[in-house]
Length: 196
Image (cartoon, rainbow, N blue to C red; front, side, top):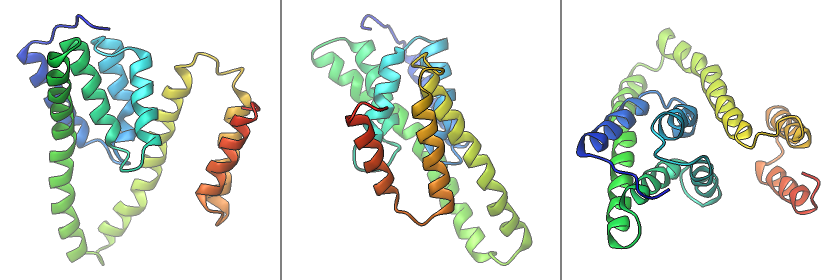
């Protein structure tokens, strides 16, 4: 997907877009993936469907924070704009910086300030209610991300074993104290055996 031309205003718009998404990333940046998909893939065409999904999959598989997929999205936008060679690398680094700074600065600053305030006033009823009210919002945003990623394969009906495994894992996480790594290992084993 080379040959993409991004003007300075496009880079600024990308930065401002990630600034605004930063304040919506209530369950982590992954919760805003559907909105990123809408802009980067559907509206602007800066990334292909495959690049978007691969960025998320690679970052989730790698050790470290899940926000790494933002860096990969920016890297791929930069590579698409810069082409191959040194210019591709420079634009890739620019894309990473634009997206990561955009997603990290506002939410980190707001989190730092709000956490200090909430810790100081943790006994207030409003603070406790806010914490309890955010849980269903985070769950809904993460489920929307799962839907977008699952829909991208275009085989929702034939992927019923995968959806069944997902539902079973969700119930086990919710209702038992079984460690998540055991469930990930079981899912990997089922996938390696070709059952999913």
